[in-house]
Length: 134
Image 1 (cartoon, rainbow, N blue to C red):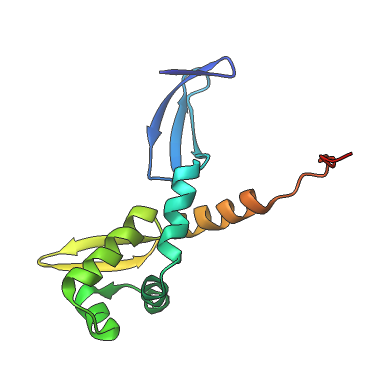
Image 2: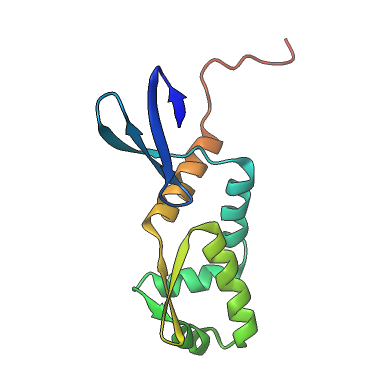
């Protein structure tokens, strides 16, 4: 249990970017976004700083794809694709699901929102900054 603004609630992680709170006093649930750490932001941008991974994301823009179809389109070896998919999945931008012996990948809406939020957060200029040299 966690104490938050004088209300006790249970906190449960939904995914890498959100958690659910249950307020005991008023018996309500709410979903909250987690603040991204510097490490999480770095992992997201690492996933986007490779041309092959950007190509994979572009392929996934048209919907879920089997790893075998990604292999054909990428013209790379299975271990290389696996390496890129691990980085993309670790970032939260891509999710994978196993069906039988095949892996299927798609773009994660939550991961996309977190990446956009990270860019906005990092590039937000506050109006109260003063020159450091005056």
